[in-house]
Image 1 (cartoon, rainbow, N blue to C red):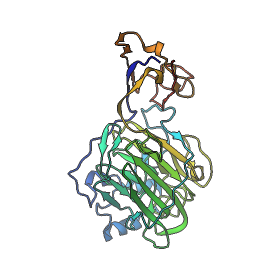
Image 2 (cartoon, one colour):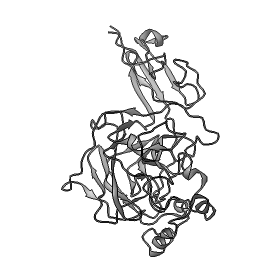
Image 3 (cartoon, helix red, strand yellow):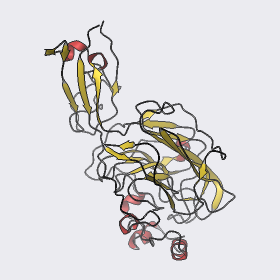
Image 4 (cartoon, rainbow, N blue to C red):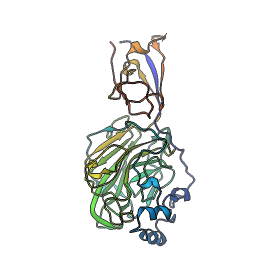
Length: 374
């Protein structure tokens, strides 16, 4: 078998902010909290009272008072952004129940967060490596800043975030479940198990989790570093949303991950309907039951890796699969190897036109097909 060395650079479709390690680890920065219009101390009586005063207001009143913006309730494609396809893969892995003997509980709160100063491995989020993060009670992980905003925005969003279900989670009522986490050598599981919604409502409940890894964890597949898993999903909205009642309508929950550069992201959808309806990442708000028992896996890493020519491709098909043979790349031999650089840039191709190599939209996931040459 002849093997040719090939260096393939995959440019991640989103570019992330650098980590900021100089902020407070117990209180929101003003920048992080400005989008909610509420006090920065989410554990204060002032915060609780001010949020309770929002119950019953309609969307226009909330926007006029500075507690929401147009992006909070819109599921349309953001102005100036073209999107097609997605960078996720469907998986069949099932939700992992919490083992209270080995998992650590996140303290019960509303709109709060828990800072984890060392997760024990490096999580590569589009070229930026993180070893610390915030578990935000409202259904997401963030990097560099906590996010307590209870009224989810659609992506893009100004802070790096991994959001299995960004919504107005409230775990203060001991009759409801809460968030938990467990850290392993190469991955971390964060689970929101049977959590309720604002204001201390325990019926119905949601159960979902996110797993992040250093890319070597078989539990989500080697080469992947983010996975969302869902159990039974039954609500989308808290009482401080424009409907004033919940658990549906009002501010839709956001699912996906976001770079923080205000341009590039992967949004699975926005959910505020009691149905199984789903029409893609944008458009109409989706039905939360579409998420029931689902699993999604991503690779949000950036960088380069080496493959042999037997592993590479050059014809992109409608299934986002490319196949490159040794003959395709062996133009110059150096000691029996051909050195070739293939750059997959976010503006040079996509998978939208059934094999068309030139597209006008962002990169979708590309599958590397192995083709062995004997």
